[in-house]
Image (cartoon, rainbow, N blue to C red):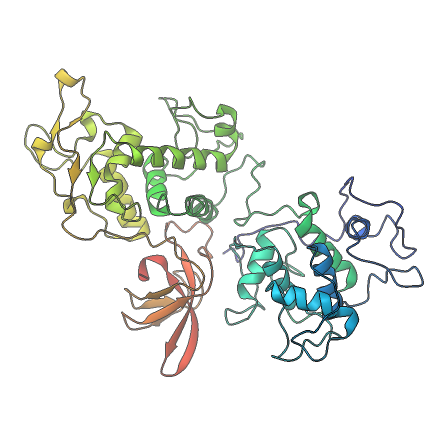
Length: 483
């Protein structure tokens, strides 16, 4: 069982990154070029964001104070440093401009309504929240640390700075949220946020796109979910994963020799892309993320087509509304007709029906074409149409509201349970906890994925807070169980 999906080179203590932004003239005796964070420190020094002490030393191992962190942030973002009155009573004149400006920018907060505690050492969890707000981070890593619980104030901030390549844990399983941050480490973290070249190589799903190897099933689940969520509501992740189930039952992109899987009809890789006219063929072959994005782009274009029937209000969040776009992904040919011409019975062997079946099985959502109000006479096909389907009716309705996507919820989303079984960990093998159907829950962060890396499920897991009998419990809800 794999505890973490994200595998970053975050724990390395040394980096050799060249950047023209380094100011060679600003040398500190205690920061030689062999120092692990030499580039980061001198990048900030060159931009006037950080200074040494009066004796010319930087003191890289000295723990940073909250006041010093506020000053560095204010300089980094060109905030007003003019001394002035602040909302905090314990901030001196020298820091007042930086602290008040960062406070007004909603980057920093006090330790109380009237105190900032500028002389206190900043902790790693405070650092995470500060940098999350400063850089307006959104994407979250698909991992949790053993020492960062869901009820931590920095739970999502820590996942965000990891996904952005600012830092990870002190080891694979621990973040040490209460530990102090040294001057050298804060300089490294801030420099990585400001300069993409200094950032750690990070993937929220933990896959190295240059590896030419097949990621585990749940890493692919993460990659597909993230790619679909990145469209900002244009396509439900469940649709894309259902397509992969049918196109590529083994969820594999590469052969053992590192070459892409190409089908007899020329379909490339995971999404079996055959229409390559608008895409980079080499990237379709060797970049799984690009292959997924290409498939998503094709599906969205099919959904927007005006020559295909529109279902209900064509809300993309309703899975049934994708019926004809899914058909078109494979081809609007007689083999995919919704009905058999000879008998008028439903064609349950059509491509789109297979995708709906995959969604029912692996995403565990009751999507069905039977809710689409259509009849055999709505379609014409045969030798006279070269077996292409002619759509005689362009507007169709559902006999109910439709099945809403469950894989696009996020931090702070209020939901209620449609299933009573939650888990103590994001895994179907974890201890089950019974919570009444209809119970309100708060989703605390972005999706997580099954701890069993090759689990065959397509659904995701949400970290949730559940209030029961006056107590708050922190559990994991499979996506099909929240609405």
